[in-house]
Image 1 (tube, rainbow, N blue to C red):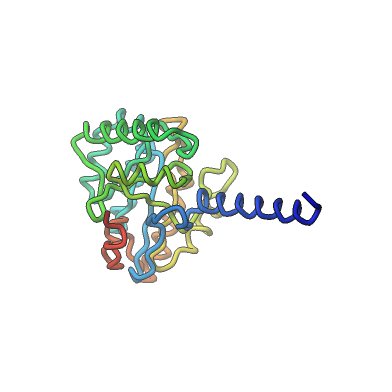
Image 2 (image 1 turned 60 degrees about the vertical axis):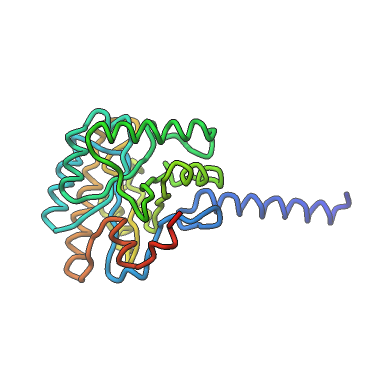
Length: 251
């Protein structure tokens, strides 16, 4: 191989790697398969979504805060925590919020076999249904958020096979970073506009009652800012319904 050909081959490999990273990691990417990440046709409606709960230390206060503002949200639950908090899961649903599968142990799904992914999905579903509730749906497909938003074509095929629809996001608040501040989380969340899906956390996969006071405080700031501007905070299924785009997610 001559030098020019080698350079071209290297550039091609880098480009392919870039596309692979984009498709697997960027939450709004759709090249590996469609996920719910933003619904601009929904008008002045925004989704607050919370990962890694339920958290007995912070989820109850968050539910009270959402009620205070007439807001609805979507919670993506880790199965191993769901097993511990059946009453809290029931309360989330009874208060009108949506829930989705976030696996049982929070693995990086593209690094796992299809069989392991099936096991994670099934175990989380069993934990939630043992509490007497079921995952929320869009077009008959249950909501599921891959941990870290990471997916590959095989990941999404398994989701579809098991009756799930992937949900990612369009606004990243980085509230999982240890040194981030409430102000920084709020600033990022306030970038949300019509049809955006905001990623926040009410829990942590390594601790059942992790400190999420900054995420809750930032939620209050967003509600107090966006509410008076005419925004409505809705669940993921409500957002899709408002946008009239459900057919694009049908099996």
